[in-house]
Each structure stands twice: as C-alpha cells, then as structure tokens.
View (tube, rainbow, N blue to C red):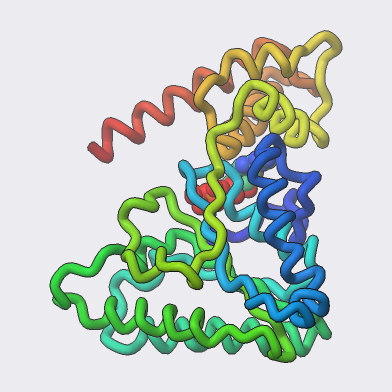
Length: 274
Ligand code: ATP
C-alpha cells in the first residue's frame, strides 16, 4: 500500500491512536522503537543499533499505517517504496533505486532536522524472495544492495536509519534477509478480532453521521475475517448507500448492504484471480 496515494481524509502522519486493534503489534513495535527514542543510552551501553523490523501478516491489516505511526512516534523522516516496483527492472536499476532510497532518507532527515529516518519497504518479497539458481541477475543485485545498506547501518551516524519492511508471505523471503543482525524484530500483524474490528469501525466512523441506535458492535460481529482495509471499505460503502437513499445519516440497513457488497467484491476478486 506504500505506493498508493493517501486519501484526502487521511492525514499525512499517522499516530498509534489512529490504528484500530493491533494492540500486540503496537506494543511490540513501540518497544522496538525505544532503540531510536533512547538512542544516546543505547550507544553509551555499546548495544548495536536495531537495523530492521519485519511486519508480517495478511493484506490490509495496517502494516503501512504502523510504519507511518512509527515514524511519527520517533519523529523520524519517512520514505517508502514497494517491492513490487522492482520486479520488472533492468539489471542494476533496482540496486540503484535501493541506494537512492537510503540516500533520500538520510537527506530528508537532515532537511527536516531529524535524528533518524525510517525506510519503509512494502511487499519486501518482491525484492527479497528466495533466489533461484542465479537466474535473475537484476533481482540478485537489488537484494544484495539492500543487504549492503542494512549491513552499513551504524549506531554512530548523524542520522540513524531503521528499515521497516512488510510482507504477506514471510516463508518466501530469502534466508539472507532472515539472518540475525538483519531484521532484529519480527512482528505479526493479524486480522483483527471482534474488539479490534469495532475499534477500527469507530475510527472510520469518526467523520460519518450515524442514525441513533446503530450498533458498530453488531457490525463487528457480522464482519468476522474482515481486514482493516475491508472495514474501512464497509464504512465508506455504507455512506454511499445513505447518499443514494437520499439520507443524511448512515443506518443499520446501509451498513448491512455495505457488508454484503464488500463480502461479494472479495469473492469476485478471488474468482477472477484463481
Ligand atoms: P498491504 O499488505 O496490502 O500493503 P497493509 O497491511 O499495509 O496492506 P494498510 O495499507 O496499512 O494495510 O491499510 C490499508 C487501509 O486500511 C488503511 O489506509 C486504513 O484505511 C485501513 N486500515 C487497515 N488496518 C487498519 C487499522 N488497524 N486501523 C484503522 N484502519 C485500518
């Protein structure tokens, strides 16, 4: 989702409070971020810096939001790329793009007077998937450049760099990326449970007038298995049903229709891609 333009409703920065559910992921991430927050102490104690955090989990669960919130929380500069950008690149172009990305992060931090920068790479499996017998040279070079950048992260740099990467499929990653000293923390970002779904629905209902008696807890019950992105879609579709019905508020009927629509859309996606 890193390549997607943020929607008009979404602020450029995200805070952990703007992310529904995901309590454990948020806790683990904030703990890991102490490495940036308490940088001086970490350095004095001779602890090596944390270089990378890997977020794993199904699509649309908030991994991009978490990376943005991490930047906000630590007052770091933020740059992002998606692994999918690299798939069809000529030999050397991908490696150059990785080099530029880290350079851009350092420059942006200096420009914004920040002590740290977070580089976010979504769909990291597009770069760091398992290598198959050296057939893809451009791909190898891109991955090698990423490994070089990670290995080059030092604790005594002016701008401390942290790589946060996300993937839906950790099992596809090249073992070189999973070696100690690369991604020091692996954080699982799962589909939300009922409480998480209700929280996410509330967040996306903040700017929507609701008919009295509408129960988001009921909606949360009826949306088992939905991701955060799908729940956002439910709220948005419900507002569209309200508009079509000439109503200035969302009611339970609009929400039920929206749940059906999102569920149906999902099924159609599955049928066309498989
Ligand atoms: P992908 O793996 O497809 O890149 P992702 O895990 O990075 O997905 P995001 O891009 O963070 O997912 O989420 C997509 C959108 O879904 C967000 O912009 C937001 O509107 C909504 N969303 C997802 N998870 C949450 C959440 N936990 N709280 C609030 N909104 C959420």
